[in-house]
Length: 195
Image (cartoon, rainbow, N blue to C red; front, side, top):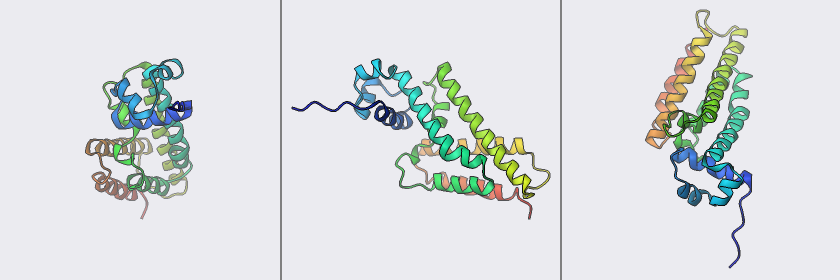
């Protein structure tokens, strides 16, 4: 019988990201092995154990989010935010879309407790808030925002709203329940513009 090919580090991290995204840090090592094909030896010697692998998966997810979401938002405006939100919450082709956001899930995961994980949570929150502030400032520079709109508070509201929508997806295991909330958020964002 031929030997099973060993996963590369990149494959192991990607497969574990989806497993942790779906089941959280509380996923047992045996279940992690079954869902990813990672063996215990590789987990301990090459990936830093379960927590080390979880952190590597968070880092991979954060890098993707920074490139695909936060950088475009930071260099964009309200239209950019709306377009990316609609894409994210209407994505029926992505099987993980119904599980919310990996980092938001981690923020609410009582099993995921360590200083290293907390550092990633804070980084995600900072990236989110800063990108929304930047997009709102871009909108303001183009003289499209209402004058009385507080950019810092508005960016915090956006962050909290999107986090809440992601948690709804995770709880309901479907992104169809969050669409009405996302549509209301889009209407709210449009009301921030000058008429």
